[in-house]
Length: 372
Image (cartoon, rainbow, N blue to C red):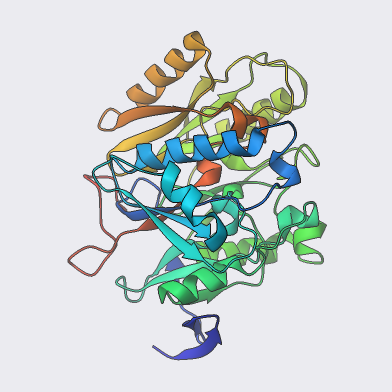
């Protein structure tokens, strides 16, 4: 394989010089581990009231500990916060939480958007790459020091870098591992992310780096929040041809409009294999706070489990757990209470990023029959 080597940070990143085909495995495939990050300083996105940063760290620790029962967790932290992180993240899980010190000055906890996405080469399936989607602070709507985080992480991990010409947040992309991508228009076809690039050019590049042949666009909600309506809080694949939708509670206002538009589009669409979609509603927890994200579909699939949000409302939490357990009968559903993260506009999926495993046969490793 022809490569161009770029010296970056502590390591060497291999950047592809010749065009190859890639694909992103579905989240339900076997993971090597999950990446999370420890916020270093008080940041306007999650310090709206006294004590919120400390509570967010407690919830982030609870998520990491829950995941560590099923797969390893790497918790990235700045050197000055390492003692605090190690003290809180004393996991009793089978796989543990490894606190790893990074030189990054100001870590964002939203690893779904900041960290690289991981893809495989179609030519040589043992080759795993980190895809840098040029994170730019959610369309320059929010200040961040993590614009080069993905490249620095890959250099440190000695994982080859796959470059792309477009800008996208990881939470804006939902793949089934069988050639289908669902995405909202607003966070991708956005002048603050991809100015001057038409839909066709963006689609072709998404197809190249994610290995999809079908892109289904959901309208989305412009300027609805910092993310411009990420798909991972609205619609998620349970399996190819099967999608769970987050239904607002009460189902009124701008988020209800987004839900109904997503349902309309998906009910008339087919996936890359020509299948119509089976759509399942998952009602959100009731709230009067329009800034609080109470979507249960913002879960993270790990090896053998579903790590799902809980909001302290027993009736809706239990109902969501039952629905998810029916959708994932071969996985254990574990709920983690995350009110502070929800108030900050995020969820469990937002805080995590998986690194897919490579199996003994030098190809992406499967979990049961979940692979492509």
